[in-house]
Amino acid sequence: MLSKNQLGFLYMFLSVCAFSLMDIIVKWTADYPLGQVLFFRGFFGIIFYFFIIPKNRIKNFYQTKRALLHLLRCLSGLIALIAIFIALRNLPLATVVSISFAAPIFTTFLSIFFLSEKVGLYRWLAVIIGFIGILIITEPGFESLNIYYIFPIIFCIGLSYVAIAIRQLSSTEPVWLISLNFSIAITIAGLCSLPFGWKMPTYFDFVILSLVGFFGGVANLWLSQSYKFSEVSLVTPLKYLGLVFAIFFGFLIWGEVPSLKSLFGGLLVILSSIIIFRRELVAKKLSPVQRHE
Image (cartoon, rainbow, N blue to C red):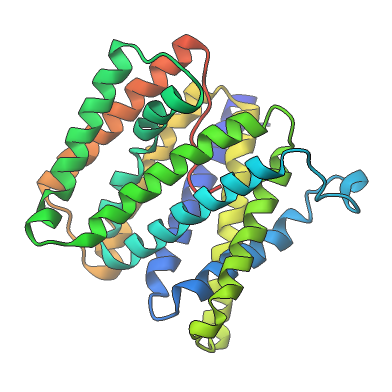
């Protein structure tokens, strides 16, 4: 029988694996229109969440008194998701994952304006270290005018506001409703892209595209379960296994070999997020930044 901490580690590991598989599929299905992939991500996410809605909320699951904040959370999350999908299709897998770890940096910055939080010396130092890491990673992109390096940064900014919105919503709204509304928003956005062209998938590709929604749904559920069973400080470092998976599968499938400069920049970004995480833990304001929600 596993202890609570062991269960927390297991769920975090499964969450990282699911997110990594979703990233691989998004990159693998680059021949399909982006809007079509969004639809599969959202629609099969909706199906998944209907299995975890409490029975007493089946008929009125949509009711909320904070519709505007839900809307802002969905819009920022949608921007972040589109940005990360574009980045995954046009940049090395390890590069995208490395920059995505910078989300806590932007959350720290935005929390000053949206949550009126005071940021101390250590967190400002972490922000500076993180930005240096981003500059080191993207410097080759600026040299060759590769505009796609901007999309992982857009993802981080969008995800940062998502973290703040969720922090505000979670005081009154259940987690499943926040995630379900986002899945509905993704599905609607995907359907709106239908006039711009969809591609009829093969049976195999249909299953693969469906897994984007499945892995996105279970990844967030497993992430929440991990934080439920174990202390956040114990399991959060496991999320950096995502970079190891990205390096391995990027090389195995696409022959991508990250440069030493990119790896060093990625380590600086990870270091900065760890510093921010530790300072928030000390301040008792811990609110982990989830990836795609």
